[in-house]
Length: 511
Image (cartoon, rainbow, N blue to C red; front, top):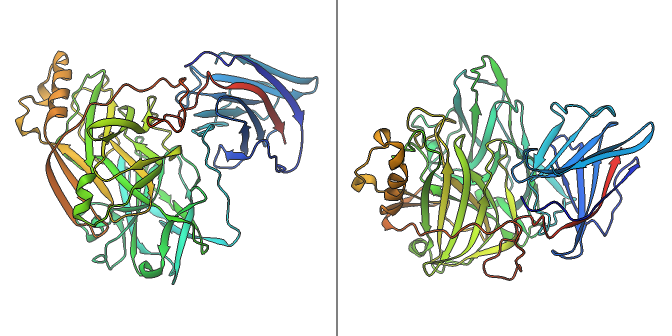
């Protein structure tokens, strides 16, 4: 964390009613799924003052803070309220976090707390079209098995839209927040013609549906796309099928639970400027041979994507404008970094999470646009900790397995759904199950330097393999407190700069 904010004043007032438009605070986010906690903010410039206004639908105290990892420890927090004897607050050096109580007695918040990662200084404004509706991609009262990990897939047709529309908002509908870990909606290739509703990855033809249309991860909420982009749906693809995949994480092995979770896809007939694509990058998913040793304080995996091969699918290849990213590992994940290379030199990061939280997985706006040109390379690096595990951790579907993925949100959409890789471990003399602790780093570097098998998939589920890929070295993560001009080629402006922010005024409105 950077040094504590240099100046801080707090004003508490009572207010009722809805929020009025305020040109000084044009940005707004609900921080919770029930829309009880609403944050507004504004600033003159990225190195000036930033003003927050927080409204919580409660009659008790309110807490608000800035956190490096979504937890209270190591955060800067302010707690205040308006009681019978007037206003009160307490501040101490203590993603945005909040908590509130139902009375003026400041005590444990229980479930009345939450966290959300918001790009404050480079926030992309979002609006809701007036002529909009939504499609539902849901399961219907399925019985969740008592397995610790269960994937359910529903292949379905969505209501027919004869003309092209744009999805502008993805809303999760969660029956059991303690069970639903993530949801993905995939577009199916033409060969998938029959719907079904059953466990995933049982050899069905629907397993070939891998064009990501919408996503949600545990801890995330409603995601609104920037105003100039939309996910295309309908028109010539009206007869296509879609596969909803829901991962249920059930460590307590609960039995007899019925679930009807899914996604609402809010769409509009008023088309936006650009079609959005979502590209999967990282380690090739599934039960691949990329084992993580036990008892590792730190073990890094690597994957790469060389976009020069895109020209084998279509030509010319447009510049891809990346505006958001969703990073994904499982329980052992501690960090995820996505490096961007041009002419064998790193020019940027497309995503960084130095404090990865398994319970806080959400799509994060980059603020500034990151341009991927044909021939650029992407390296996805994941850091794991397995000190509490007695056996190797495999790459796989279970929550106790691991993944290393970065979903890139970009425009204009192209016919590429995945660009992933896996090291050729045949020349690595070590076996992860037999590696002593003092040889873990050596094993890690052998896998990093091994040639990469790269797999590129398109929306028709045609897979193309390319050998001898190279994982390039990533530079050190820039300091979160370092101010960089957004026009700089190596821009990390999406990382909130705490030292450069003077928090002048925090309005806490108790509605």
